[in-house]
Length: 396
Image 1 (cartoon, rainbow, N blue to C red):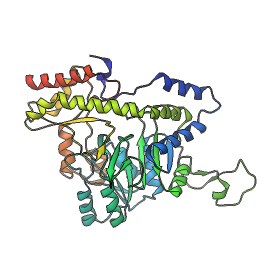
Image 2: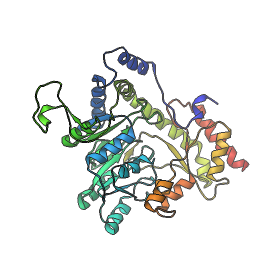
Image 3: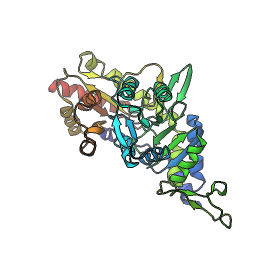
């Protein structure tokens, strides 16, 4: 077995990536230099968004997005239960109350119908954070329409979806375009579609939100005299701390890697889609026997797949935990995405959530398994994974 299959996700660093980082290391700037701005420009060019603010990681991006929308005590924020904890933790970190709307059974993204029902029965939240699960965009146009009706704000959690698109009204929209959201966030963690080592970004088409994002990402500091709140002597050196925040900046070192990786995104996307197609062919017999459910997306979705998630059915000869352990024994990396956020101890203890609250996400969490998917994989690696699972099922 080749080395890349030992992990479900893995970065691909090229000689060009190394050279890009090296140029920064011998330059005059390691942080707060020109490279970060160039990376932000490239993100805008990719998505069509008007503004991009690069930050230290995706978690910081979610937190800052909630901060600029003034989420605070008494406000409710809603997200998907089937995501990494950061999709929800940004809400109580700003003082709000987190809540969850269940997923659609097919795409495992937030259900617009259930979101509408939530607004009807609980009242509209302050903010809704739909998650683009595994690289498949949530139904952002439908959620955006609901936001116009109910008055909530929308933050697209596109951490999984750099490079993904969706078709609406005869036009293709990139995830992160903010055509159907107030803001969108990206993550550039090493297992994501591109990496900057650690890193993230907030995108928006609202210049006012972008200006405040930049302030909050840099200690709440304002350096533009035309936006000062008080008169002060001198020029060039002057700045104001206008609100309390921390340092969430992205360094030029990280930005250089991110920009180099972004230029390679078309190749990454092509390879990820080829691997997904090979997986689908390799699992066809297990799907026909009713043991596995494979990802299936409609034609109006053009994903850059971040994860390849299979679901075991009740007829499978082994349960998810048994398959997970058997694959690990064979040196094949796999992972569960995710244990529902509302069932973690903090959320149960602090907010009273309990099993059964969001049944679709909970059922998926019991039966889903993420298999290796990253551009370093070769065709023989997919053959190894599919063959191993077939053998494990036959031997169970």
